Amino acid sequence: MNLLDENGDVIETTTTDGQGVTTSLQDCLHTYSVQFVLPTGSTFTDANQGGDDDTDSDAGNDGTTATTTLAAGDFDDSLDAGLIFPATIGDYVWEDEDGDGQQDANESGIPGDSELAG
Image (tube, rainbow, N blue to C red; front, top):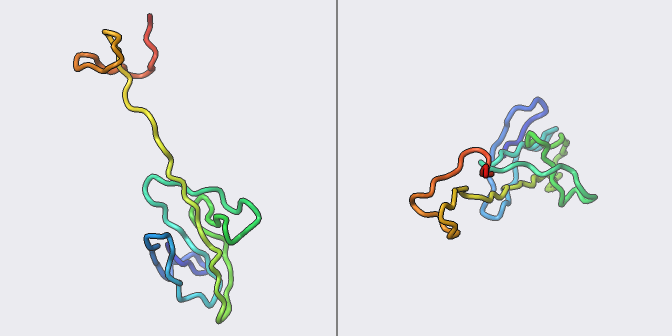
């Protein structure tokens, strides 16, 4: 993830550990936002759902949070992102020529629509 300054420029980068926790970003004495980078195959959850800013996702569709300003000594650990890793299902559609419920070596796949004209 990236720490962005008020102009949207990256001023620091860090990664999460195995538990999803980041180390503190150090250069925070001005207005900034956080930009989360999506892992391959994931999407961001909807931002700001529910009534608790400490537990909801703050990243918009582009992975960036709203800007916030910190003064010396401030600490804001409420900026976070929820990710969705979609599940997939399916495998193969074939014509079961002998009706035994098993895909035999000579039974080919059906392209396009999975419906057979009868």
